[in-house]
Length: 82
Length: 235
Image 1 (cartoon, each protein chain N blue to C red):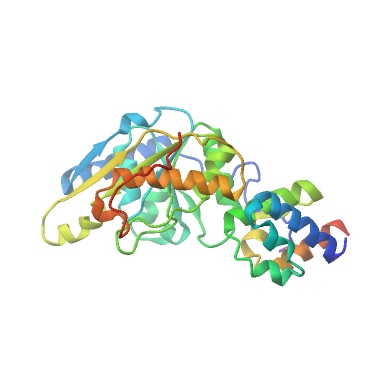
Image 2: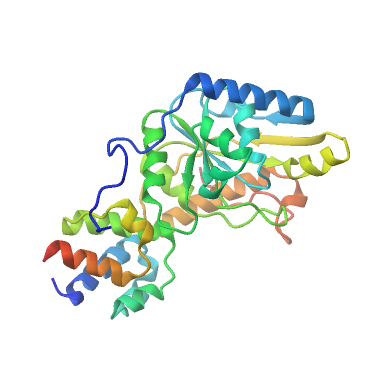
């Protein structure tokens, strides 16, 4: 799965979690753009739940706690779906 | 650590086990201390269901808020507490003995959220500081969506709970006086929707915050909000 495909899944997930910000999410072109969105922990938690269900991946709680950027999340998805 | 590495400990259980006898013993001691060293005034306790899942959404002024809630309730209440409190010389042991669920603020602590949901699934009652942290000036702060998320995920009723006067306990003790401390509950709110989108969670949070504001004296409300409650309450 390419980074662009993963970002597309993340954009879709975010649009479902926070539809009011859909236009903002559609402008996301890189993991760094995701970091600049200022998502709160509950929004991110719900996004991660949806990604796990949609992509059939699983993240450990420790990983989520220590995740510092969206690039970590993208890399973890790539590792699992490769 | 890898992304899929399981969490340490028992993977089947997320919340610490509650030891009823220890809980009741600690609650008894705390209750005794509150009754002798302060003047507690409690209203609306009957509004909390005596059994079954329930979420107490509490404002937060002082370290004494959690122990006061535990002491005044007849049913066992599992507090959510900041992880750093685990190491506090007094409140740490109290929180551990009462089965507190510790959360790392500012991090995506899914394990803590799972633990809270597990307690609710088992028919327990949890107390959560809806503002996420103590108010530095005593005024009600903006609510966070964590409580609304818990309610939407679990379907448990949300009970607004206002605590005040606890910030005066320590200053009063230093003057050899007893502070008047208050705990007041409002009617339970069941979110109209269990949707987990941000707009729905925001709406539930606004509703519960307006209910807490309606219970608090005006001096604890943010400047410019001198009329507690508002017309956004929808249940």
